[in-house]
Length: 580
Image 1 (spheres, one colour):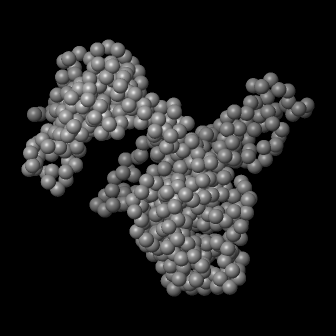
Image 2 (spheres, rainbow, N blue to C red):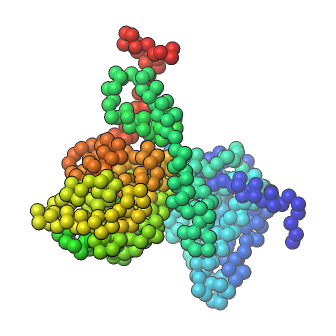
């Protein structure tokens, strides 16, 4: 079959115009000829071994569709109950199905027995039958768009529950798998962008992030280079100026909001507008890694605790989980360098560069390539979490002995001595503290880290989680997304990130001040004032999470506090604005 002139452009227009439709269905019937063309397009899809494992169950009866809608609503409620508070609030405003409103429901099934035992291509990949059905769904969707019909894929069903209901009500054989329930019908119009994008639930990833050339991770532009290039032009002045002007018109005395006002200015500068977007939902990314310097006896805790604590985070039983639940944030763990192999689990991002660093008192903790790989892992974690719809990122860390390389990093970037930067971490005794100070001094003397070469400093005396967090901070800043920093590990990583791209610090907020002396030095060097000072030293992201409500309040104040004019409140005598 030959293509005709204009077919290519028409196809690409249809591809870009396809939408998952949940609202705006009208009661105009879908005529038989139009429905036949749509199903004919679906039936023309390729399939494994030409087995054509699909069937299409067309449902029109309102009573059955109401029953199906009730089943979907139950699953929606269960999903909503599982969400962090900020996500749940945003989800509450989303329409996820139109089973009652759409005049047609089409159930697309997969018959895993079709074609017999010897289907070409299915022997080694049994899931190819269901994958083939997904191709048929896509054909149906595109053909429907060309026919000016809306389609919405409803995924709020447990597949077996839906199959059993359809078995009872319409006799659907129970060996079939339900791949899709599609709402189909005429609509009032098609949105310019996907609904979940316009609602702020998620963003579209740039194609360049998804294309790997020849080897995995090889993009046309290296993520670190791309990020640093984006940060070179980060200008926060217009948004900050707008926020400062707005503060003069708010119904609070000048300066009365103190540091909260400064947070609002920082958020507005990053956003380029006042008021800034509300910084929610929030997610804490706990970067985890082990350290070769652990062998030098700098902590009484065994290295296995790193993996054990990661398991606790994923099970929801750690301090970070309690604090995240309090502020409505999500917890994600990023494995950039845990020595143990971790089992796949919800909430775990497997980004391991190597199984722990080397002993920095003997050799560089990482090669430059390993440090760069960990930086890229952090950048990509930030990209993934921001495109998933998060508007505030929070740093966390886990790694037994990680305050030792943190001290070395702070010393390298600030010029402070080992005795000044080295704290007691998890509460070590005097003898262990003295040994820790000596170890930090030994590493610095061995490597002579040069702060003008931040990648080299990270490689020599840093940890994989330090490099990961540094990349995370850079990636978030490049996307103009604010990040709340946790304690000394985050502070040490921020020094490295700031040395790579000074403008990136405009995106960072110091969540709190840790009792570790290196943390105060790091914050002073970065010019960041701690939001809270509660004497915390837990790590994990706990102190930063406690600051999240303050950060949110700063944005909300700029958006919600009335101005003198709007509220009809008189100015203090002699304070009329000069620009009036």
